[in-house]
Image (cartoon, helix red, strand yellow):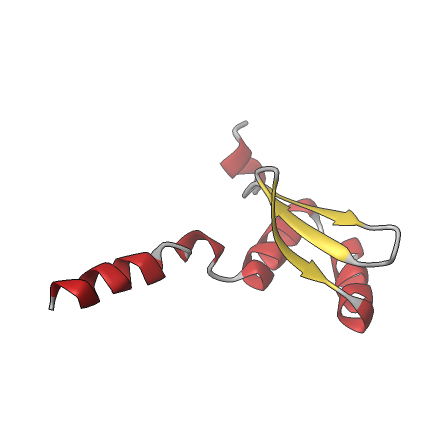
Length: 80
């Protein structure tokens, strides 16, 4: 069974010593949550299945894969 079939989207999370939660995608940090947001997010992840955790982290991380949109937008602006 492949990663996609298991619901693995490549996300992981790390709970840091200070209580912050870091969302990681393929070994790269994409988001850090602090304080109350981190605590509620940890509770939510702990009560979810693995595939649900992956989906939750993907939604929370948002448009991390669209980081090049700005550069593409600037490229288009320069052409005009």
